[in-house]
Amino acid sequence: MERDPIIEEIHAVREAFAKDHNYDLAAMVATLRRHQRESGREVVSFAPRRLSTNALRPVEETSAAQQGDGADPGPRKASA
Image 1 (cartoon, rainbow, N blue to C red):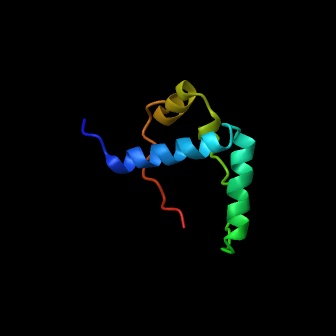
Image 2 (cartoon, one colour):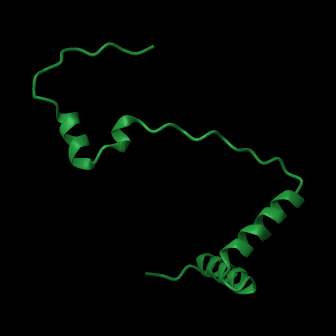
């Protein structure tokens, strides 16, 4: 695989940033948040999305529920 100089630069900058903060995640986050505040740009946050009930089931249960009992449920109505 060919080396990508852009990716190498990103890795170098990330490593230097982490090293400057002694690899302390809390210090890195504090610095990034300070930069964000000082930028003067509007920060947009969205409300968390609700997960469907299928997303909360184990994989085996979800696939069994999707397969159903094999009976043809007939045509589905389009939801509005």
